Picture 1 (spheres, rainbow, N blue to C red):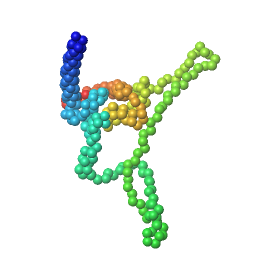
Picture 2 (picture 1 turned 120 degrees about the vertical axis):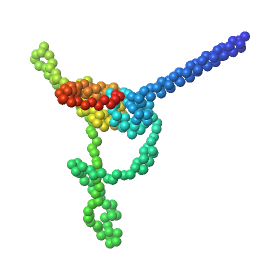
Picture 3 (picture 1 turned 135 degrees about the horizontal axis):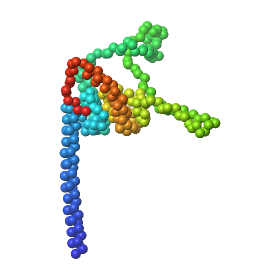
Picture 4 (picture 1 turned 30 degrees about the horizontal axis):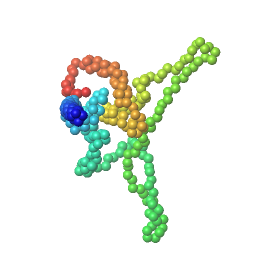
Length: 263
């Protein structure tokens, strides 16, 4: 009787596990269907070029305040993120080899020139025939574009507090806080402007800029913090947009581009 009871319990457990496995398999199918539907919806949102983007790239673009067509093209050209576990360096190298070199670019004349003299090795300073010391007869020049890395620092804003040593009841006077784009943000105005320029002029999404901060400075800041600063700039530009609208409506003839843009 004990063996029969144990056998029944085992059979019941096996049946329960089979039901759970079946439910889990059905749930996995539903999840895959939803993932595919979400991906198709995002591709529809961002256009045909976004078909080659990874799911992670599409997800991160969804967190942007707005996404332009230039950003989509930049993402496609940049390839998948490192988290995707893909390495296309060999393929990109092959494409670069097959592409014909357009020739060396001339660097602008208005840029400062800093000369760097590379001296000959000790063996080259003596004549190989008579042993006499050779003389410098000229230089073989090549121009390369150099740069000084941007310097990041923490600005400590110390607002002066004053009080009369004799009149305690008069209280404490504190210097007013300086005007800022986002008063409660950890980013200074010039940093926020850099976010704007990189996003809307260089088509560099904010989540990539966040990754650059982490890589170069070790600053792990939430993406929503950067988004809030960018949206604050948009709020400050509303009066400019209103002025442009009034100026536009004063004309006698207006043309409109009705191309649909998903943002």
